[in-house]
Length: 70
Image 1 (cartoon, one colour):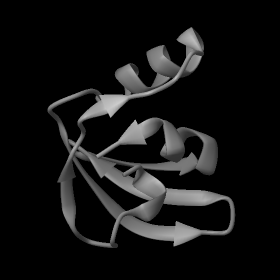
Image 2 (image 1 turned 135 degrees about the vertical axis):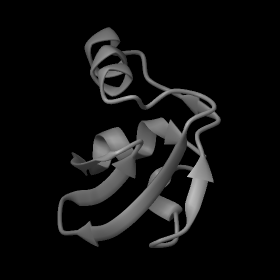
Image 3 (image 1 turned 180 degrees about the horizontal axis):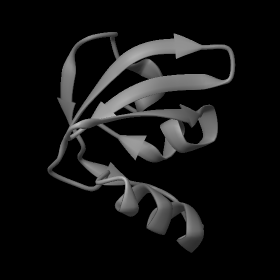
Image 4 (image 1 turned 180 degrees about the vertical axis):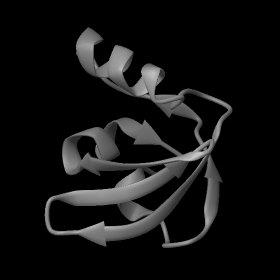
C-alpha cells in the first residue's frame, strides 16, 4: 500500500519509492525518504499529508505520498 492509505500516528517502514521522475526521487531521498527508513503520518490535509521522517516533519502532496510504498 502507499502512504495515502496509512493510519495516522502509526510507524511504517518504507518498502520502495515508485516514481519515474528522477527529480521527485532525488527530492524524497534528500528528505531521508528511502527503502528501509521508518515513516509516520502525523496528519492528513486537503492536498496531502504531514509526515515524520527521521527527526523532521514535512508536508508532502498526494503525488509524493502515492509514490511512497509502505
